[in-house]
Image 1 (cartoon, one colour):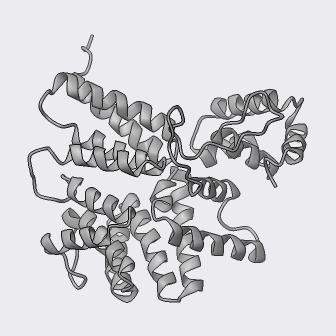
Image 2 (tube, helix red, strand yellow; image 1 turned 90 degrees about the vertical axis):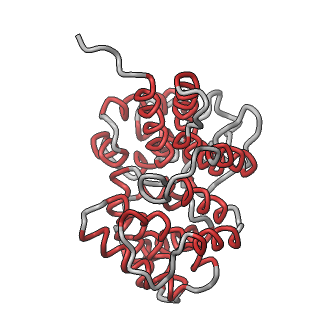
Length: 330
């Protein structure tokens, strides 16, 4: 029988699971996975900072409304021996991006200059993370036309090379650049296109981490959909809207996306159960919900069972009616 994988490999698996959970905005799960991964790396690789895990931890803390904790984690990650920035060493770009997300435009811009990145460059894949940071810096500096030109090149390269993750990230930023250039209709259409690709794969934080500009563009998209009819799936839009609802982290409350408590419920619904509930209200079948959330049918059935129990409902119709009475859904 094959032996157990070495501890460093197991640690990387945990970090990978944390990254997936983070992207889905499942912050409690992400924190649990990354904590386990970091602990394993520290146990079996003493003296070497677990850079990948610490970078993921920094973003989890940032998403949960703990900017100081995020900076501590990214600072510890920076104690690793220096290596060229790029796809194989994402730390420098991630640090600059985090600083930018926390409002330090000057520090992020300084990093792009020191790294030798310029808006007129023809970007190539190994340095893509840095160019995506540069595009964000240009947007923050009110230089949307330069950002859009750079993002058009990044987006086209990602599409041509069939790199879905890069298509989604560059596409989201491209939509923001179009909006900043006052091309509102094109921006809404661009966001709808990239969400159509992103939602089945569970991408949430790649949009939510862009903050208020993305929230404003999402609101435009929702208004446009109400006028034009079906478009981006309801469950996808609901997940994105909740991801923008960040509350400061407090002891014993790690996640920044927990639902508001309803006093009349003995046991509160989780964020995921609220998501499933909204899909039930939209008439989605269990299979359709499973496909939308990229989970198994059994997982959806468990969520539905929990929802019925917590709401004291005998069936789905009764659960939706009860949820509307309580103001849990519109």
